[in-house]
Image (cartoon, rainbow, N blue to C red; front, side):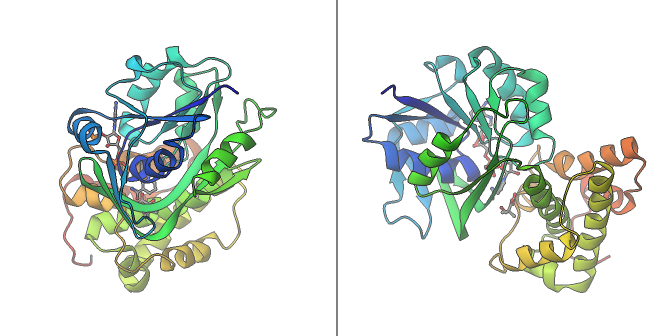
Length: 318
Ligand SMILES: NC(=O)C1=CN([C@@H]2O[C@H](COP(=O)(O)OP(=O)(O)OC[C@H]3O[C@@H](n4cnc5c(N)ncnc54)[C@H](OP(=O)(O)O)[C@@H]3O)[C@@H](O)[C@H]2O)C=CC1
Ligand SMILES: CC(C)(CO)C(=O)C(=O)O
């Protein structure tokens, strides 16, 4: 049997968590070869010491992949690319991948955002792209070390709308065998939108006030702002005829309440640490753009976007 070549691109919160599980499971298995792509300090640290995952799920906190590369062009032929970068790095990665993709190559993007599939397809028209969403609270503690807290990570992976005959069950099984909680669905877009309801609203409000997911659920003024953003996303989803549950807003608050109270969002960590690049565009910019195109008013999203973009980030209520 031909060895399955799987490459994890990006060893941050998401790639570090899921990549760790895959690397640990398949290190001495000849049927699956896990490679990592990391850059600069992360490359050096992981090459020398392995990838560290601090998580209650793993007693042995170090995993070694069979190979680690600094760039996509160094890679041998790859069957499955698992893309775990922030949205502002997506186009750059796709440009590097496009000549490495043949009709059988699979791309699995583990990212937030409702337009990731379309953005990949604009650059890579061939191959198989499996639209997905992911839940996991994990972040880079230092380069090469990822910290995971709370519930086990979860992936919802769907069929490629462009290649509905392609069955990704074998890939689903490989991931599940590594202890990854994964649902494989015919159509993952309702799940991707459902995740977006949660992460866009909670990401923006947690980032704006530097308050945790639990605090946004609990504090009435913050709760209200998150609900107003969700109403705007709901109006957009309706216009786009995305099938989402009627009680999506209530369900989103229930989902948020299932996270440990002090969990921060990745947008909050990036905005509050003053990172030059953040996913503000993915969460607020995309809603504002959809609002314009679909003639849906998105005043609350515009307001919080302007506040965050102009550096109004204090923990006090409006
Ligand atoms: N963290 C979380 O809890 C969750 C995040 N998400 C989503 O998942 C996606 C990934 O987020 P997350 O993992 O947190 O992001 P991180 O910033 O933690 O990790 C992204 C990693 O990608 C690396 N990277 C970027 N470009 C390249 C490149 N060209 N070559 C090699 N490595 C590269 C970065 O390297 P470097 O370190 O050198 O910058 C970084 O380590 C985002 O869309 C996020 O919204 C979804 C659910 C939960
Ligand atoms: C809220 C969380 C941790 C849930 O997976 C997330 O998606 C993020 O912070 O980007």
